[in-house]
Length: 322
Image: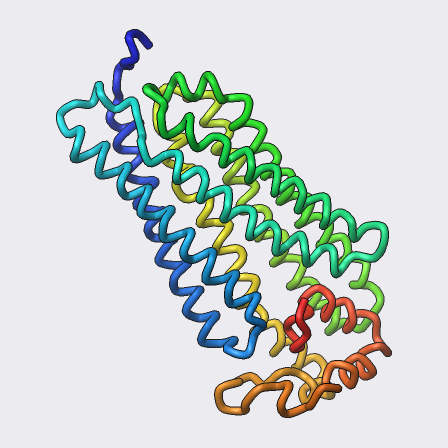
């Protein structure tokens, strides 16, 4: 590095950025599809869920626009001028949007932990939410220096400690959430019938996969950021990290349909108390069962602890607001 210019290897700068952005746009398509499927399958969900899904999608749209602008700036505006590829004016906005998306997703799963785990373990959810909020503040703090940086490599050197801290904290939150939920479900697994254990195994697998994907991606991003500061491989990975979080949230919401069907198949007696499989045809569950629908279900499930553990892990699945 000298005089604010570095020797550019196009395959690890513009090429890496274009590959990362292409994958990010592909993931945004999946995010949009998942959002559509959610609104189509769960029109009777709480307005809080609907606002959450809409907010994440709008943030993802802005995130995708910012990434697309950076690719256009690097490959079109600076075409034939690779040595000027040292600034990324939209990077600050992308960092802030990514932090907000991560906060919403991790906040959702943290709230689930708080409502599922018994005391004193339920406060793990509060701890995770506070860490995620601090992480979001750190991301917003990085916005201005990222947008005004004259050299991305110098930005890496000046703010490496904070970027590293944010990535480590985000990974730790994912591991804590996935580990805590898996621990709780595993404790319930041996308390019931084989069919209940099969459903719980599915929940454990889904929980681990959701946290593992984002956690491993953040670790790979951190390694690239620390070991390859003079190219854009780390930025290419960063372009789609937030979309992995969004997909994990939408997958968790949309997976309720298949999980509800599996629970109903394992316990046929619960069919008449679960929400209708086709709410548009059968109407709203609360209007069918009245204000005491939840209390009726609780009476039928308190006889077996595993049923209650499943409804706690996915309380909205039975028409109860988490």
